[in-house]
Length: 75
Image 1 (cartoon, helix red, strand yellow):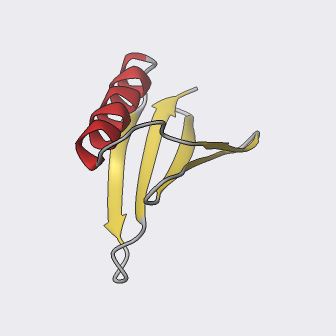
Image 2 (cartoon, rainbow, N blue to C red):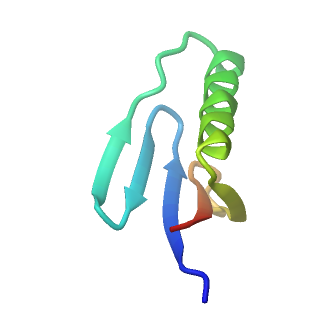
């Protein structure tokens, strides 16, 4: 039987919070424009993909300020 590890990423205007089973870590995107922040975030997702993570869900909260991404990878 396959076992999976899960990660939740909450992306707000100026902060990215990553929650895994081992704990929570907050990262701040250092960028001067929205386009640069988006580019940094996509690069981060690419890095996670190279580590075996795959996106399984995305939720955009109604207030428009928070995006939640759920990822998984084989353990």
